[in-house]
Image (cartoon, rainbow, N blue to C red; front, top):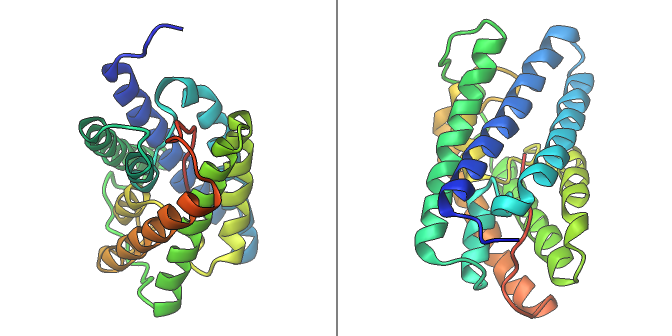
Length: 230
Protein backbone atom coordinates (compact mmCIF):
# COMPACT_ATOMS: atom_id res chain seq x y z
CA UNK A 1 0.00 0.00 0.00
CA UNK A 2 1.50 3.42 -0.95
CA UNK A 3 2.27 5.92 1.84
CA UNK A 4 -0.72 7.97 3.01
CA UNK A 5 -0.35 11.71 2.55
CA UNK A 6 -0.57 13.96 5.61
CA UNK A 7 -3.60 15.70 4.13
CA UNK A 8 -5.50 12.42 4.09
CA UNK A 9 -4.41 11.62 7.63
CA UNK A 10 -5.57 14.98 8.95
CA UNK A 11 -8.88 14.69 7.10
CA UNK A 12 -9.29 11.24 8.64
CA UNK A 13 -8.66 12.58 12.14
CA UNK A 14 -10.99 15.53 11.62
CA UNK A 15 -13.87 13.56 10.13
CA UNK A 16 -13.49 10.60 12.47
CA UNK A 17 -13.41 12.77 15.59
CA UNK A 18 -16.38 14.78 14.32
CA UNK A 19 -18.46 11.63 13.89
CA UNK A 20 -17.32 10.37 17.28
CA UNK A 21 -18.62 13.51 18.99
CA UNK A 22 -21.79 13.49 16.94
CA UNK A 23 -22.27 9.96 18.25
CA UNK A 24 -21.47 10.80 21.87
CA UNK A 25 -23.54 13.99 22.07
CA UNK A 26 -26.29 12.96 19.68
CA UNK A 27 -26.95 9.66 21.46
CA UNK A 28 -27.02 11.53 24.77
CA UNK A 29 -29.65 13.91 23.44
CA UNK A 30 -31.67 11.04 21.97
CA UNK A 31 -31.46 9.15 25.27
CA UNK A 32 -32.86 12.17 27.14
CA UNK A 33 -35.68 12.33 24.59
CA UNK A 34 -36.58 8.65 24.89
CA UNK A 35 -36.60 8.20 28.67
CA UNK A 36 -36.40 10.01 32.00
CA UNK A 37 -34.54 7.05 33.56
CA UNK A 38 -30.97 8.28 34.06
CA UNK A 39 -29.63 4.74 34.22
CA UNK A 40 -31.23 3.88 30.90
CA UNK A 41 -29.97 7.15 29.41
CA UNK A 42 -26.42 6.21 30.39
CA UNK A 43 -26.82 2.72 28.95
CA UNK A 44 -28.05 4.06 25.63
CA UNK A 45 -25.26 6.66 25.49
CA UNK A 46 -22.59 4.08 26.36
CA UNK A 47 -23.71 1.45 23.85
CA UNK A 48 -24.07 3.99 21.05
CA UNK A 49 -20.63 5.45 21.76
CA UNK A 50 -18.99 2.04 21.85
CA UNK A 51 -20.61 1.02 18.58
CA UNK A 52 -19.65 4.25 16.83
CA UNK A 53 -16.06 3.88 18.03
CA UNK A 54 -15.72 0.39 16.61
CA UNK A 55 -17.09 1.49 13.23
CA UNK A 56 -14.93 4.62 13.04
CA UNK A 57 -11.69 2.87 14.04
CA UNK A 58 -12.29 0.16 11.46
CA UNK A 59 -13.03 2.83 8.85
CA UNK A 60 -10.13 5.23 9.46
CA UNK A 61 -7.52 3.07 11.17
CA UNK A 62 -5.63 2.27 7.97
CA UNK A 63 -5.42 5.96 7.05
CA UNK A 64 -4.38 7.84 10.19
CA UNK A 65 -4.35 5.19 12.91
CA UNK A 66 -7.75 6.55 14.03
CA UNK A 67 -6.40 8.27 17.13
CA UNK A 68 -9.31 10.76 17.53
CA UNK A 69 -7.72 11.71 20.87
CA UNK A 70 -4.81 14.03 21.76
CA UNK A 71 -3.55 11.80 24.58
CA UNK A 72 -3.32 8.86 22.18
CA UNK A 73 -1.38 11.01 19.74
CA UNK A 74 0.94 12.29 22.48
CA UNK A 75 1.54 8.77 23.74
CA UNK A 76 2.35 7.71 20.20
CA UNK A 77 4.79 10.62 19.96
CA UNK A 78 6.43 9.84 23.31
CA UNK A 79 6.84 6.19 22.33
CA UNK A 80 8.42 7.04 18.99
CA UNK A 81 5.62 6.17 16.61
CA UNK A 82 4.98 9.64 15.16
CA UNK A 83 6.99 12.85 14.67
CA UNK A 84 6.26 16.12 16.47
CA UNK A 85 4.87 18.17 13.53
CA UNK A 86 2.49 15.37 12.60
CA UNK A 87 1.40 14.93 16.20
CA UNK A 88 0.61 18.63 16.57
CA UNK A 89 -1.31 18.61 13.30
CA UNK A 90 -3.30 15.58 14.46
CA UNK A 91 -4.23 17.32 17.71
CA UNK A 92 -5.44 20.42 15.88
CA UNK A 93 -7.57 18.30 13.56
CA UNK A 94 -8.99 16.33 16.49
CA UNK A 95 -10.05 19.41 18.45
CA UNK A 96 -11.58 21.07 15.39
CA UNK A 97 -13.36 17.86 14.45
CA UNK A 98 -14.68 17.31 17.97
CA UNK A 99 -16.20 20.79 18.16
CA UNK A 100 -17.69 20.41 14.68
CA UNK A 101 -19.28 17.09 15.60
CA UNK A 102 -20.81 18.54 18.77
CA UNK A 103 -22.28 21.51 16.93
CA UNK A 104 -23.66 19.15 14.30
CA UNK A 105 -25.36 17.08 17.01
CA UNK A 106 -26.97 20.22 18.44
CA UNK A 107 -28.31 21.16 15.01
CA UNK A 108 -29.58 17.63 14.28
CA UNK A 109 -31.76 17.79 17.39
CA UNK A 110 -33.02 21.32 16.71
CA UNK A 111 -31.03 22.95 19.50
CA UNK A 112 -29.01 26.14 19.38
CA UNK A 113 -25.77 25.60 17.48
CA UNK A 114 -23.80 26.50 20.61
CA UNK A 115 -25.28 25.88 24.06
CA UNK A 116 -22.65 26.21 26.77
CA UNK A 117 -23.04 23.31 29.17
CA UNK A 118 -24.19 23.97 32.73
CA UNK A 119 -23.42 20.42 33.94
CA UNK A 120 -21.00 20.72 36.86
CA UNK A 121 -18.40 17.94 36.93
CA UNK A 122 -15.89 19.60 39.25
CA UNK A 123 -15.84 17.11 42.15
CA UNK A 124 -12.47 15.61 43.06
CA UNK A 125 -13.58 12.01 42.66
CA UNK A 126 -14.68 12.74 39.08
CA UNK A 127 -11.28 14.24 38.28
CA UNK A 128 -9.53 11.18 39.74
CA UNK A 129 -11.79 8.96 37.65
CA UNK A 130 -10.47 10.68 34.52
CA UNK A 131 -6.92 9.67 35.45
CA UNK A 132 -8.03 6.05 35.69
CA UNK A 133 -10.17 6.17 32.56
CA UNK A 134 -7.35 7.63 30.45
CA UNK A 135 -4.74 5.29 31.88
CA UNK A 136 -6.88 2.26 31.11
CA UNK A 137 -7.67 3.39 27.58
CA UNK A 138 -4.01 3.86 26.69
CA UNK A 139 -3.02 0.53 28.22
CA UNK A 140 -5.69 -1.24 26.18
CA UNK A 141 -4.67 0.42 22.92
CA UNK A 142 -0.91 0.11 23.15
CA UNK A 143 -0.97 -3.23 24.93
CA UNK A 144 -2.94 -4.81 22.10
CA UNK A 145 -0.88 -3.18 19.35
CA UNK A 146 2.44 -4.07 20.96
CA UNK A 147 1.26 -7.61 21.47
CA UNK A 148 0.95 -7.96 17.70
CA UNK A 149 -2.86 -7.94 17.48
CA UNK A 150 -3.73 -4.51 16.00
CA UNK A 151 -6.83 -5.90 14.31
CA UNK A 152 -8.41 -6.20 17.75
CA UNK A 153 -7.99 -2.57 18.77
CA UNK A 154 -11.33 -1.36 17.38
CA UNK A 155 -13.35 -3.94 19.31
CA UNK A 156 -11.27 -3.58 22.48
CA UNK A 157 -11.58 0.20 22.53
CA UNK A 158 -15.31 0.06 21.89
CA UNK A 159 -15.75 -2.48 24.68
CA UNK A 160 -13.49 -0.57 27.08
CA UNK A 161 -15.27 2.76 26.60
CA UNK A 162 -18.69 1.13 26.93
CA UNK A 163 -17.60 -0.46 30.21
CA UNK A 164 -15.79 2.64 31.43
CA UNK A 165 -18.98 4.69 31.12
CA UNK A 166 -20.11 2.58 34.08
CA UNK A 167 -17.02 1.77 36.15
CA UNK A 168 -15.76 5.38 36.27
CA UNK A 169 -17.74 8.03 38.10
CA UNK A 170 -16.88 10.57 35.39
CA UNK A 171 -18.33 8.33 32.64
CA UNK A 172 -14.89 8.17 31.01
CA UNK A 173 -14.28 11.21 28.85
CA UNK A 174 -10.58 10.15 28.64
CA UNK A 175 -9.96 12.61 25.79
CA UNK A 176 -9.07 16.33 25.89
CA UNK A 177 -10.69 17.02 22.50
CA UNK A 178 -13.89 15.35 23.66
CA UNK A 179 -13.81 17.31 26.90
CA UNK A 180 -13.42 20.64 25.10
CA UNK A 181 -16.15 19.82 22.60
CA UNK A 182 -18.67 18.70 25.19
CA UNK A 183 -18.64 22.16 26.78
CA UNK A 184 -20.54 23.33 23.67
CA UNK A 185 -23.71 21.32 24.41
CA UNK A 186 -25.95 21.77 27.44
CA UNK A 187 -27.28 18.23 27.26
CA UNK A 188 -26.81 14.82 28.87
CA UNK A 189 -23.22 14.50 27.64
CA UNK A 190 -22.15 18.06 28.43
CA UNK A 191 -19.56 19.43 30.84
CA UNK A 192 -19.50 22.95 32.24
CA UNK A 193 -16.55 24.94 30.82
CA UNK A 194 -15.23 25.61 34.32
CA UNK A 195 -15.01 21.85 34.96
CA UNK A 196 -13.11 21.08 31.75
CA UNK A 197 -9.56 22.20 32.76
CA UNK A 198 -9.42 19.79 35.71
CA UNK A 199 -10.64 16.93 33.51
CA UNK A 200 -8.02 17.71 30.90
CA UNK A 201 -5.30 17.96 33.55
CA UNK A 202 -6.32 14.56 34.91
CA UNK A 203 -6.21 13.08 31.42
CA UNK A 204 -2.62 14.28 31.04
CA UNK A 205 -1.73 12.71 34.38
CA UNK A 206 -3.19 9.44 33.09
CA UNK A 207 -1.11 9.87 29.93
CA UNK A 208 2.16 10.23 31.87
CA UNK A 209 1.44 7.18 34.02
CA UNK A 210 0.39 5.18 30.96
CA UNK A 211 3.58 5.97 29.05
CA UNK A 212 5.66 4.76 32.00
CA UNK A 213 3.66 1.54 32.36
CA UNK A 214 3.57 0.81 28.62
CA UNK A 215 7.36 1.18 28.48
CA UNK A 216 7.75 -1.38 31.27
CA UNK A 217 4.98 -3.87 30.48
CA UNK A 218 5.00 -3.68 26.68
CA UNK A 219 8.52 -2.66 25.63
CA UNK A 220 9.16 -2.40 21.91
CA UNK A 221 9.00 -0.15 18.89
CA UNK A 222 6.57 2.77 18.77
CA UNK A 223 3.06 1.64 18.04
CA UNK A 224 1.10 2.79 15.01
CA UNK A 225 -2.23 2.21 16.64
CA UNK A 226 -5.81 2.42 15.53
CA UNK A 227 -7.51 3.95 18.53
CA UNK A 228 -9.88 6.50 20.01
CA UNK A 229 -12.19 7.55 23.03
CA UNK A 230 -15.49 8.56 24.42
